[in-house]
Figure 1 (cartoon, rainbow, N blue to C red):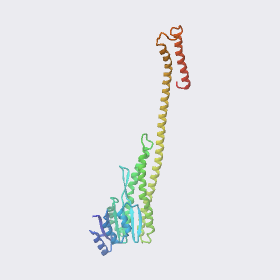
Figure 2: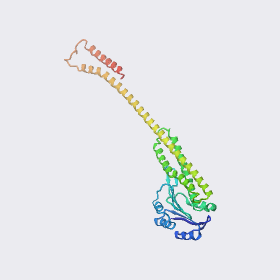
Figure 3: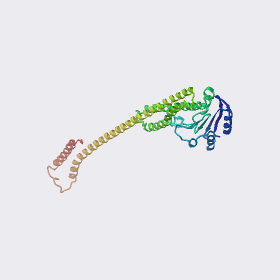
Figure 4: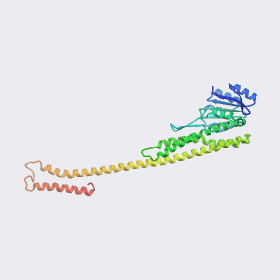
Length: 338
């Protein structure tokens, strides 16, 4: 059964605990109180049963059935439809996990439809039931308490994001640590968090603007303004986080580029040094090759060979080898090979 909790309140006090929706509708009319129906991933039949009883617009039913809605506030006659995106931070994977809760507020009823574990609406209900003075204000008090719970649950998310951003900042200038992917992925989580939280300030502002028209209690308006203040602070911190991560990504890109340039320069220096060594080896090889060539030719010991039996043949061969060696040495030295 999708009904998590179901109660009827009269003057802020829980008076009835109906077991079925039909019983809820009957007792609510009889007692003249407010009903609060909590549903968790209800079936289409259950949503349509509630919608038919309270005269809820077909578009609201369609949104409630499909889920995966953005944060928004819509009014259909005397029924207020609000979609909230609660969140929690998974520190191990550095991800923001989003839930979704739909809140239907009418003149004498509240219907909450959760599509995830968060927020903890049981805690909201317990808090309100312990404060009949607040709950006495009716459906608007329930809406305020749900908003307050969702916004409060953003605080641990901000703390988790801030902690990981601090870690990233400390990694930026550490050698052999590439934080580019981590920065990008965390930035994506911050953007998703902004999409869930930024509409809230406009939604709360719209609620406050309509307070006089719909006769919302002045004390309740103060509570809503307090939630609006917290929402604005959440949005400001999320914007700051995004700016810091954008700057960190720029710095990290610069550091990575500098490291690549340093590596390229080092490789170039090594290549130049290797070329110099090759030049030296080649130069000395050529210098040694010249006398070796002459010595090889004159060392063949053929009988019929020019200058073989000449008196000055040996000095000429040695002189030729020395002259060629010094000549090549001078040429290579001049070219900077040696």
